[in-house]
Image 1: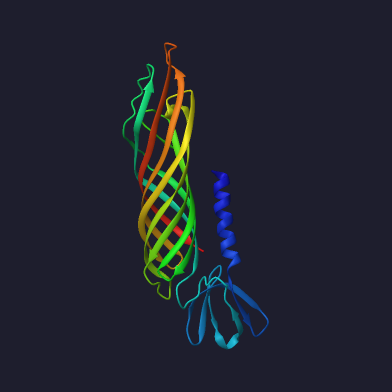
Image 2 (image 1 turned 90 degrees about the vertical axis):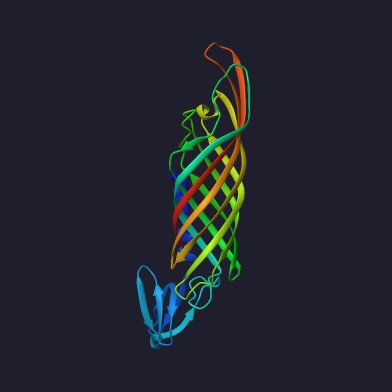
Amino acid sequence: MKTLLLILLSLGLCAGSAYADSIYLKDGKIVRGTIIEEDDKTILLETRDTQRIDKSTIESVKRDSLGRGEPSGPKKLETVLKIAADVAGRNSFSNVKVVGTNTIHRGDSTIDPGVTLTAEEIYYVLPAIGIGAGISYQTPRKEPVSGGRFNFIPIYGLVRLRSMPTGSNNYAFATAQFGYNYFVADHEYAGAGNYVMTNGAYAGLGGGYVFGRMQVEVLYTVDQGRLSGNDNDSLGAHYSISADAAYHKISLSIGYIF
């Protein structure tokens, strides 16, 4: 968990520092940040705070090569860091096979809310169409029937469709995600002392709204994997168990765009 937080923070710092616009003033000073607004007389620059610079004091302006923060036209590249509350989750099992005397129930169950951290990179091949990739970390959550804990770590590609951004970078968007899950669980979730978790597919669909540097999003996702294992029951009899697992959830997130 700490390692992932460091990775997400590093991504944000790199994104924020590597793509700044530069304003060269006539007095020799250089001011770096992100240009968020421009008119005939001034430029509004976002740094640690926001400052408006009179064009009469400017020698030259160098914008970042990828078009981040340009006041005219949509951005081409966005790095988004998100934190989400998974407010509605449902865990289910299918293709359940038990050989032996184990009687663990494998059905649908409601999962308590959890937290997901996500980093995404999106490049707009057209003003309204973006493609990209992302990685998420779901904090471990409890499956109430078995008492075990599990979580998925999806890595995915994405497509985003957006409305035309305004000068202050406001727009609505829809997104679709498809990828691959790393499936992690303990032996109680698997129902066996010796067990293997097999990774599976990931898919997500949702939409949201961007206002300036902030983003809100609602996302429906499905994480899939498979469990298998074996153990001895309380009477010493050997058994084996296998099942496909699916975790459906709705997430509400807030994000920051670099």
